[in-house]
Figure (cartoon, rainbow, N blue to C red):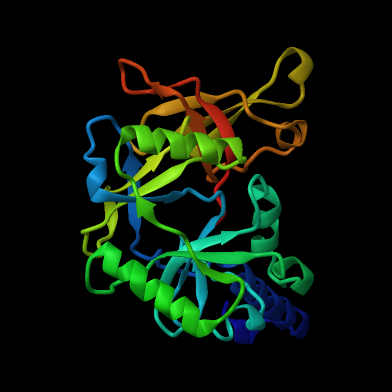
Length: 285
């Protein structure tokens, strides 16, 4: 029976259902093509790289008009936050302070931005998507664009010569002592590119990776009735259990099935699986 054959009450219910579906149906979004980092390893020619601090923030892409997440979802920043930004596309990190990722994530995820919270947020620029020239040249372009914008919360991440392994280890120790999480290396002569590449390397005392939650495993003992572990699927299709790293609140309300989570680990075992893997956080969309 078509809609025309429904009673008045039935037609009203039909309309309500259509409205509800329009509100809950996920929008089709395209994730922006970005450069993704490999992990630093001994033997890399550090003289070819510039080094910067790895900030513990939320990656965000400015297309010249709107701000979106790494997954392509719009970020509801206040209008004043981006009002005077350049029309040139930017790639960077929304950042609050060292050790403040969870609070930042809460600010960024709000559908209705809170001005007082966003007054504390910075956008730290580290790339110009699609721009010509080497990375060293693009750094100068970024600095020029940010100077012209003259917005205090819009900044360029400082890039320095990596020099050699001894210099790199000293820089890493200083960042870690200050509460930072690591360093990033970017080839100074590299043209703009996307995808995972040795053009960009991360240097951290712990390694990290992402996986998709596929099951909640029940806890035992003191965790009876709570989450015991997450079963996650790695990009290569293999499964891994994450049983540590959770707060009590996260064990009571674990990341949902299908969520993308970040975990950290020390190294890979002989089978290529992460050793000493522990939950770090849910990746913001």
